[in-house]
Length: 214
Image (tube, rainbow, N blue to C red; front, side, top):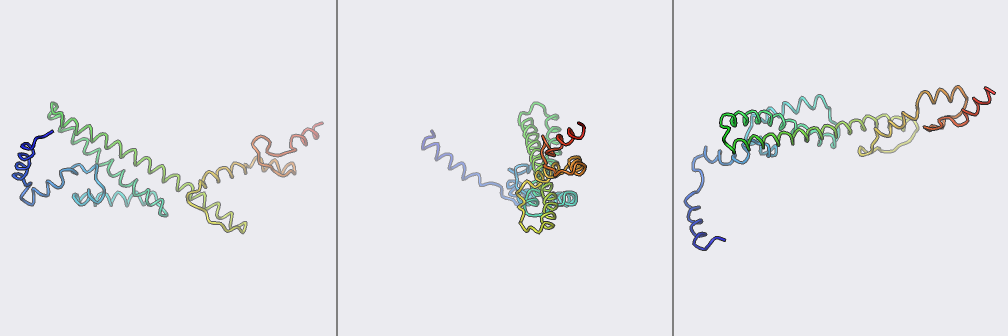
């Protein structure tokens, strides 16, 4: 624990160092903690790097054209996907730069740690981008299935709102598997009502066939 004399000495030393005086020095000091920007929010990163804001907006526009997010949920996850993808790309470039600095001075532990940290952050953003992309795929799969289910409900004169949180894609897949053309064809051929079951799709079919062949 520091003594009273040591605390007083520290306070006096701190008063002698008041930080950068020039505008350039203050700007450099303000951005020291976000130099690589891989820990920054979009607002912080782009405030210090306006040129990268333009690059990000161009990438996001291209991704939006391809992915076509619709609805609040998809758009929120799309923002995560776009920013994580942009940071993953930045990390690749920064990793190369950090590796070059370390190779020029291989004895520097600090430069090695900087390179290692950049690699880890890049991998983190790649995982985040992959996770967000999978979430977008799931949401859009369920949304498309919801369109088909909603059309069927309207044909049946049923009015019910469908939540985007419902696993409509799974419901639709199950419904389509139960409407297997083979089962429907057998029911038409035998004149029996199809009871869509995996183990016995058409009750009475086996008995009718057995009687016909007797």
